[in-house]
Every structure is written in C-alpha cells, then in structure tokens.
Length: 114
Length: 113
Image (cartoon, rainbow over all chains, first blue to last red):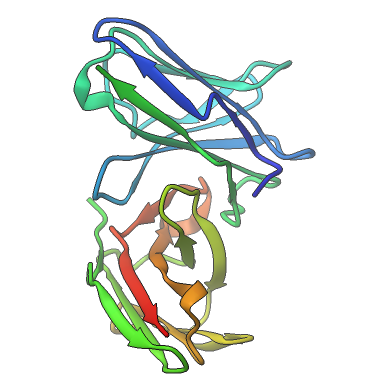
C-alpha cells in the first residue's frame, strides 16, 4: 500500500558496515511491524513497535539488530556489522489498532551485502 | 514453533479456470487467517481475511476455513493472467493480541492465456 513509505528501496552495504532502514507508517497508524523475506522463503516476523515502545521483539536476532519507533519520525531498523546472510527484503507494515492484523505493507527495502 | 504450510507450486491453470490454493497451520489456537498476493519484487497485498468457519466470498475470490482440520484455502474463479503471482497464507497468534502474522512460504500461481 502506497501509504506505508519505506526507504531506501534498495541498499547495498559491504560486510561490516551498518544498514539503516526507515519506515513511515500510514497516516493515523501507530503500530509498526517489521518482517524479513529471505530468497525463496516466506516472510518472517522480526519486531512489533508502537511509538516509543517495543511490544514484541521475539523475532529479532539477538545480536546486531535493533529497532526503534521514536515519538517523532519514522521507525528505524538498524543492522550493525552486516554479513552476507543479512541480504534480504525487509518489509514494514502498519496498522491502526493493536491486534488489528489487517496490516498494510510498504514496498520494502532490498538489502544486498557485498 | 507455529508452522504454516503451503504447496510451493508452481500451480499452472489456463485463463478462465478455477485456481485452488491450500494452506494448513499447526496452531489450533490461531484465530485470524489472511491471504496475501505478492508480485515478483513487490510487497504483499492483502486479498482477503477470514475469521469464522465456512466460506467468505469477495468478487472472484473465495476463502474457505475449516478450523477442525486446521485448513484454509483460496479459490480464484475465472482466473486471469494478471492473477499470476505468489499467494501467501498467514495466520495470527492465539488471542490475536499482538498482531504478529505467521506466513507460509507461498504458492506460485501462473495463469496462462
């Protein structure tokens, strides 16, 4: 859905660099979800955030990955010291109400680690 | 670990035919079920959701849910070449309080003219 804005659309990073992925939810949506889609695999949940709160981060790798959704500005998914296995499409979704899983997805950021 | 299983396909049907996509899930407590369509290189797009046992129809699409069998399906009538995409089945957690979706790997559908 065009209302969820992700940037950049494509990101190339060398091994060891940091990647920052941004997501602006649809207007009026305060719930943000990040998913990762590896090649030939389904989408895997990573983290669920509300403004200034991490609600569920059970899908996040224990190291190098972090997410935030500040009071002002977009949600950020940050990957430190990227490795080739981090190459994937990262999708953000937003919803209006907690537990409302009729979420709308952004166009994704395709991360390539070289 | 919640599992959502789909036949990966590819499923190939002629234009005008009915395409039948199937999905099974492991968590009997799952409450909400979704079908997304994803074109190559694009983001998932919600087609339908279903909460109750039975059928739900929306235009050419019909979702069918059987909680006893832990089975959900999507029928596409009068298939069109523009329906060619990967179809993702997704289910929610028990209680659906967190909004997290569990996805299958998707079924690739090709509709040939």
